[in-house]
Image (cartoon, rainbow, N blue to C red):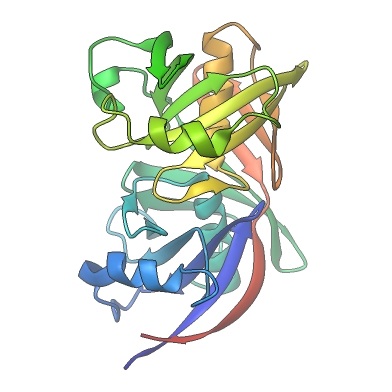
Length: 279
């Protein structure tokens, strides 16, 4: 048996178990199985995902992130903010600016620090990917307000990648929308060979969106950083907003800037507690 120290962290309620694996002590080939056990609520620590801090040859550190079902994600906006805070406050990277390698490429982050602690993190999320083949999604070209029938309901979907796949749907009343009914059906729709995250969004004011997210491999979560970014891009593509937005999620707000096709995301990251788990 191996004792492993961890931090339990969250970004707006989207929670993670974060583990330092810089020395490679954990067998990364088994991380899917470990994620399923560690993330199981009521029977273990419980979380939406498991994050490993790993060595990188191209950046300050590398982030590997596993969903609660054991699948590995390419990128996570809330997760990368948590990892940045973890690295700074554990003296792994003691700088207010760092580069983090992900499966979606190297991301640059900036930390707002007060009294030695990270208050918020801004992430350069890069340029959204709109080509269907790169999302990935079946078909050619872009998917903007295309029709998608699920059971007896027809939706207008906008699909894109923020390093991971997203399908954004605008609705009239997101609070009352049956996310748990349609989220899993769209996540696993044959159009998306690697499945997809699904955002149900509502424009609630000038430069304000309210969204609920069905995360691939997790279910409905309190927040999703890449989902917030995808929703802002989709709102711009469909003419609902112009530029950046404040995005209201169930767990709190994110500030998303969208200039010259580039996305900047700013939000908090919190440490809930730390402990030791036996693997």
